[in-house]
Length: 37
Image (cartoon, rainbow, N blue to C red; front, side):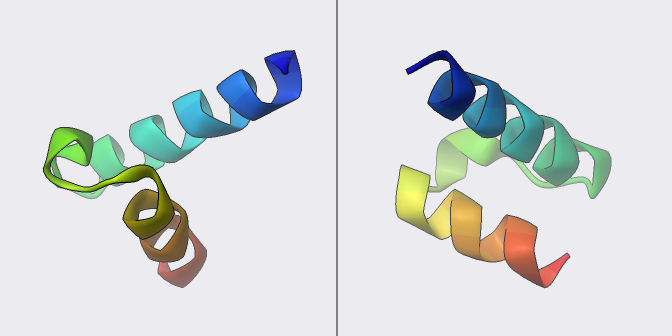
């Protein structure tokens, strides 16, 4: 469970660093975006 929370945190930080708002996307969309960046 902690690994999943850590991954979500990393994804949010990655999106924020690209100028995106992670709150605009659901969990699946955030993962897809993080993979693309």
